[in-house]
Amino acid sequence: LLAGTPDGCSVFHSFNNHTVALGDIIRQMQKMGLPVEIAESREYEAALEMAEADPEKARILSSLIAYRNMGHGRQIRPVPRSNEYTLQVLSRLGFQWPITSREYMERFLQALQGLGYFDEA
Image (cartoon, rainbow, N blue to C red; front, side, top):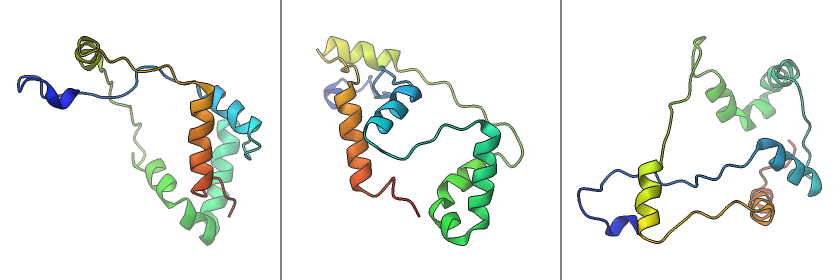
């Protein structure tokens, strides 16, 4: 739909405006029997440091570790994002993003599970 808009409408931020709470995702993972534990920040950091010391786990977690150290000691703040303009255009074109259902979350998590995303090292 957005590709068919006039040339003057050239910058869009196309993403679903309905968010899902992390707690809902964790509950869905637990319902599916996926191994997830809730931890305080200090516990998480300690576990991540232990994983960094293990060469096999560090290899698996390399991208996560890289993002963790991206700020080089500086605080990183997310860039504010807005897709209000895009939502207005899409609405005029007759499109609205669906609310993310529990069934969608389960299918998404099953797809990740099928890719081995939750396999333990």
